[in-house]
Amino acid sequence: MSIESLAKSLLRMPGFRVRLDLVIADSIASQFQALERLDSLRDLSHDWNYLLRCGSVLAQARDPECEDVALRIAHHCLTRRNTENQNTTENRYTTENQRDAACIILDTLTNKPSIRLAESRELVRPGITSRLPLPLRTAWVRREAEHLLVVGEGHELSLNRFQRDVWDAASTTQVLSITAPTSTGKSFILCQWLAQYFREYGDAFVVYIVPTRALIQQVENDLRLQFGSSGAAPLNVHVSSLPMASSVRIGAANLMVLTQERLHILLTELPAEIRPSLLVVDEANKFGDGARGVLLNNVIDSLSAQRPDTKIVFASPLVSNPEILLRGRVTRGQRKVLVSSHVTVNQNLIWMSQVPRKPRRWVVEACFADKLVDLGRITLPYRPTSSSKRLTLVANEMSDPNGGNLVYADGAADAEKAAHQLWALRPRPEKIDPELQALIDLVRRYVHPRYALVNALARGVAFHYGNMPLLIRTEIERLFKDGSIKFLVCTSTLVEGVNLPCKSIFVRGPHKGRGKPMNDTDFWNLAGRAGRLGKEFQGNVVCIDPHNQSVWKVPCPSGKPA
Image 1 (cartoon, one colour):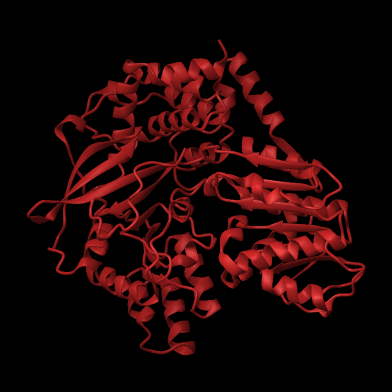
Image 2: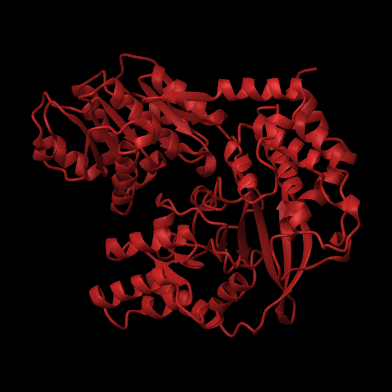
């Protein structure tokens, strides 16, 4: 029997499923301080030796469901000791050997960031390999060697399974279509591979296509940082986003970060003999966006016709038909589709529903294994007096006090309104964070002294939408990632690819544009921001009023698409 068949059989075993369901429910419930657990979920005790043996089998199967379960077992084994009551009996704690075993599962999954996170939080002692018996240590070293890349002047990259596959495929094919969940590290590996491409081709002309103007500055800054990294030997690459012929330096390495409209303008200005040798199309699923998608396709077809050896890499969130991007392409080399559902962070889908006739009492349910599992209840501090307050009151109660809380709003006005409501719910700080105060002063000086963002920032709340000054928006993103901003209310700019990973996302009947309910693809693209690889072990997507069809015009998702 193959390891994949054995893992699948294990998932179907009733005894294992019962134990697994308790682990999942326990791990989700342990994140929320305000949750009043059901009696059946209190004082749980797990058979960690049995679960870890099962997890070690599941981690070896390259199957997303098996990977997700193995990851959940390892993550909860590592974090459980910090969520237990100190008065509970000793056998409810995980031992050091068991936590080391959890790290072996993570290493089998090639998830080094989670191991480093566990070490940084002192959940496991550093130097795990020195404590392992020889066979396990040998397997650890072998995996490390298989997924280790040395680039530049001795700079080492430790990649996961998906990233290693991307590197190999991008290096050997002319046209590549990549699709994978948002949290798998697509952007990271593409930046690293681009740096290697410029090392090999010193005068290369590369265009990186992004779907919106909001993404240009972010991608441009990320690439500048990557190329200037001292760890991988700084590269002399001219990075620009201006669609002018003068922006391209002849005989030098050039990287242009452009939308499809800007690329079209640039190609009309450049001499016919100067054309990019490489195109990277980020958020390639935007081919379906009406006229802009048609323009993107036409620009790529025109470029391929003028230079048939142009290398093209399409990158998109997990979609069902990535091969469609390769149809009709004029190429001289190999074409390939790379589909991955590699799991790096556990994502929990949670439904929040009001108890009938009790507006302050809410039911918390977790969606997994095609079923709803009741976790318990929360009690809101106030009765929601308007429909908009249902979102913000629940989000505030289910939030992480350390930050990473993202609230989705349908538009700019809704975002400002939600931010004001969250501001009213949060306590007045004794002293404002110096970083927040600096941003407040900046907003007062360059936007308006009474701009709504000024008051919100004082209590660690902000809003974010496309039609904001770029400098202000960039600072908001930085402070949210750093944890100074605890709550961020976002609009559909997040769906367009703006990189804002978080701990929890709160949504209530989301729309993308006025009168346009969000479809499943955009919902899961948004949900992919929940769970920060290397910063969190799991992320949450909290859906509010999921049974209300007048709120959710498109039925609320109850699980990830197959």
